[in-house]
Length: 198
Image (tube, rainbow, N blue to C red; front, top):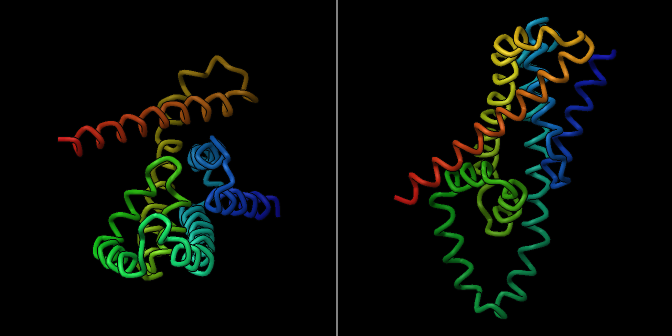
């Protein structure tokens, strides 16, 4: 029963983050911790992936619906104030739809864009299956990145921290791995920006 509540808490954290409630370190740290615990086979990877994908899909669909039902009428009503006529909005929709999958997928890896892209997709009437496919692809990649960092990094880092008392070894290992993974993610983003700038 303890495992159920742990996984239910993970679902709730991921859902809240998807809905835009900022929780720095929490979900990435949880994924790294779950990866380190895989050595004891505590939680199967398929379970973690299922929870992450479900929470992400529910949250992004809720934001998409809010954009479709709430933001779209506002855009049509007040768009003229920023020279967005209904005709221009329609042309923008057509342009966005052509490359929506890749645009959504890329935006989900940019800090602060995860929630905005789901709202914008609803506002610009991107088909829901396109949003869902891009969201699930990004979520699976994100989950596997952090989980793998915990799983692989634990084997490498744990022996180096063997001098620490057992009760703090795991938290220190997880924190160290999260910081290393964040630095790696930042380096990948920076490299991607440099390559795009060429």
